[in-house]
Image (cartoon, rainbow, N blue to C red):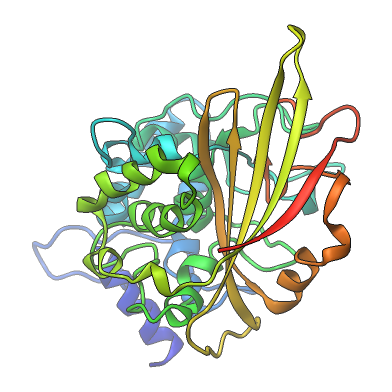
Length: 356
């Protein structure tokens, strides 16, 4: 399929017009920013174009949220409905939103720049958080950036779909619009994409990542919550045999003294899951990375991010020379954990490697 045909096909799938012509008496077509533009690929569309339109609707600030959400509903009713379902997925104990932690809205490549750009336009992020049922999700400081801490579950799924920030590793949406993960795990294309034919991006990613991250006895409550929300998940994922995966975990443990003489324990977990099938991924991706954390402060484990990586990154992370006690430890992948991210003094703890 040609790039132009691909863009048109995706546009139709998202409920958006592929062009601006219309028959007499039909509903007005939605004018949309051009896509792809320089630096983008056909797979970035229509999402990059929609993102430009949402950012365009953000000015002036007064009434921006309503304009952004109105624009989203017109350009992609399916994405709008999926985002609206985020806070409803789950069982009676924990919802899927309770299984995610917090994240900074600034890529590491931006933090030292004089005028850093957010990963997701702040007005757009506020609007989609509100549509997801969490209107106050963005708050707090992230390094030198004010009000840049947000809910990781929306940031790393729909937020990244609408990110226009080029990073040294490409656009953040690449993990969802390319088929590296589906091909690597033998899933139907689009199962972990922005608009799967079954389930939703947020539900499917939470389920798939949760089945990997929450596999220890300490995470029994979180794993039960993953299962309780499965009715909103792709049937293909519900039938997936997770027992055939061979994850390797880098576990980093910090013990932080508290004023009352007790201590707080935070465990950062990086799971590397080798693909079960060979792929032609253009970046040479061979593994899924799932990053999560367990904090004794709230006695909970939470997901932070999910993305494909290559063998070199896995090899570096699993270097035995980096294991043992007294290792420097910090949050990664834009995770935000109070008292650890951006700590005034370097933190040290134990790093070990766990098979399965």
